Length: 454
Image 1 (spheres, rainbow, N blue to C red):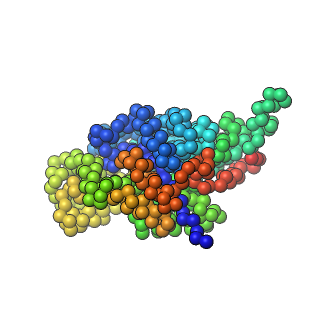
Image 2: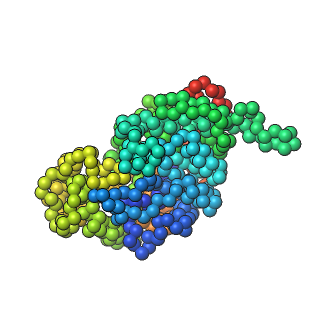
């Protein structure tokens, strides 16, 4: 009997603030009006997607001491947006990015548990970390956290949240008016956690939610991030989008998961990718060129090169040659509030120069070349085939799509994936865990011996 092909997981990423956002396009729409969120979410649900994905921004970026307005397109509050979307969707998962550095477990556990109740079991938490002191200035604790402690705090943060979610037994909420009994436990929601990062005790206010634990997503590709994901996450949001890089990352994280006593299928690998469609291959590639030149304007090209060179390049011609000197290497960078983009500035600059010389590119064309993310370009049939190849080749379990026209993808690519037998033709589960093929969450181990049951 022929084995059933792997089923593709699909998520829609609401466009964020970076050089892949085309906010100037007349068709881009608002980045903050609720109608924009509703349209994307309802289109994703029409296409039977697994979940909607919302990124987070905790401080407006600055470059050379000024607001970097080229990518300021709005970052409204995650829980408010997802809670509102829960009311206008019925099956689509709702994933929010929330930082484990600047928040507290009790509050975040309560908010995600509430979202899981309000949505009927569709909540997911994309756990991110930060050691960025600039962003930390917005918070009481500031940027106190050393870079090496980010994942230590994040791991205990998630562990603590799980203890809180497990503090209510599955059948603790009775609400039987005839018997006059509301809860079956005398001490529902009791918890006590004593650890290096958190020392809290009390009663959790929200009964166990439909999924028990919201789906946990982890974003990050570092060694620490991979270990955290393998031990903790239900899904990984990665940037490894090429076939070979994806297969290596996939094998690495799945093997690490096994080392933590988990099944490789317990962790889904989901690279962030984009797509461009056309009626012909040439039309798709021409649209890609048009989109990339919108994404990387002359100002954006100079700004992105400044982030690598770590100095003012405003006098340079965007169509002219690269600076001749090496980048300034310093912990004090001209860009504030953005995740580190370059581990080795000098090596990266030399690599970029080699590309420019080989292809005879000026600054803007070089930046367009080297900052592009994995993109599937072609006719709907070509894109469907390549997406399927990635998944069947174990380079991913699916994709978090950064859409440039999700309606077109839903209308033209989804039916082809369904014809190939690699994507659902209807929702068969009501929860996000069900969509992703994940089992019930494992109960947490109380840190101080306080009993939990579920």
